[in-house]
View 1 (cartoon, rainbow, N blue to C red):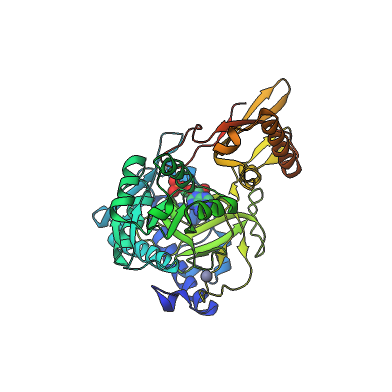
View 2: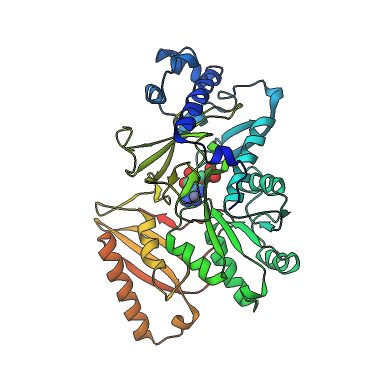
Length: 431
Ligand code: AMP
Ligand code: ZN
């Protein structure tokens, strides 16, 4: 079991909380230097970090949303002199105004440290070769993990995303032992490996670090089984640097959220009320260490809960359960709330299913119609039509038992549904 920041990763809860309080005060002082927070904090009677007396005092501060970041574009949230900024990352949204996060050199070092401890927690070391299949550029997945892998002395192949043929050639040529990719891309890559007649046993892969999009436990199990490698869940968002917010350790039982850098709260997304530990709600994070772009009580929109109890790896930072989806992902179909993750769970638990699916919602007169298109394995696809009808019936039964809606099922040939280089797009609400 290897630790990168041993003492910090196993710090006692008491010491961790006093470190958090000290850092929260510093965060408030930094936020007061930004145009965005200055007025907001003063209105609440907070004129200095010393007005924060306990961690609970954070509840006096208003939430920050993605929209606030857009309103503060381009420099309203910058807390340092521009000459001290060494990099920015941005994520584009549907509105056209990107959300931008600036970093000082120290911020990049802190982020690299958080990811180095994350990679070390999955057992990565200088013995490993990592093929980084996440996009390099404004997106954080490429460069973020790149720096940490180098820090750990791993050999990094900065492959970036896409170009599957080339990815396969590099896997063969350089013998990567670790890959960093979205889970949907690894499922797609497997189909392409099969087409090229390459078996995972011909490669050197031992583990995959997957994240950037919601995926069920069944998807993890499927990737593990297909490739014969360990798959670790990685959670992050560009507003909190990117990957390296929470990561699974070798126990693979929830993601340790690095609480010395991120103060976490779980709230009721409807009321904004802070929920008791263990209850499911929206994750809210504050940047305890970032210098250039401080964020207080940022609403991630991601739904999760804290896993109670301690982890046998010895790390004391609390663990997040797999992200269920985003509060803004929820579909209301004929009045019933449905998360795409519930549909994925059912589909991926069936052995006949292939590696890709789509969820489409349409208007059918006054009602809503749910269509689930799913790929099936090559053996199943060539079966008798009666067998295919039976399979469709089984999927409808399993889905309606879980989401209380009867969908229309379309079965597709393996590899025929569209794939995306970055995050998978699988839900199409056409109403
Ligand atoms: P971005 O800011 O573009 O990196 O997107 C961040 C968002 O991706 C998060 O807020 C989540 O909704 C999603 N995401 C990232 N990692 C995971 C993960 N491991 N599981 C589920 N969703 C994730
Ligand atoms: Zn652990």
